[in-house]
Image (cartoon, rainbow, N blue to C red; front, side):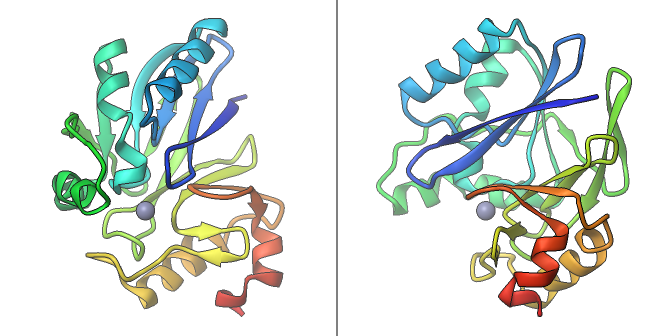
Length: 212
Ligand SMILES: [Zn+2]
């Protein structure tokens, strides 16, 4: 059984997740620490819980989801994985930061690719990867059937959906991704999004105005 802890970091109020197993091995999803105090908070959580980071795995490469990648990659000497189609998005990170007047020197490069339909194993536990493009071209969702949750990045939010006006975004593709890969999960599946509070697949089917 996997445990999940989340933080909300940076000016974009981005959710960073830590997935850990009973051996205290963990994956870090979308580390968004920007301020030093955010990095400190993150590191002290890892230390207090004696977690052993194995990899950074990202739902996608937007700026607010990658601010903290290089810091944890360096600190724990772990690899960084993302879908191959996010490489152009990653490369744009420095320019995007400048647009927002933010400093961003530690642009990460990926060490491995996260693949659609792949089962990724953390010890004995596994998560399933779905390619769910539309918000960005290589957005992925991480589904854990046993724990009944999916980390959906910026694809689906509580009462909303990801924006589709950024480079590589497409509204129809996003809706298709949600209907094909998320709305086919059990209704009681908990949706852990890249921003805002958690929700469930059933609630979003009923109430999400973009998916009526
Ligand atoms: Zn995004």
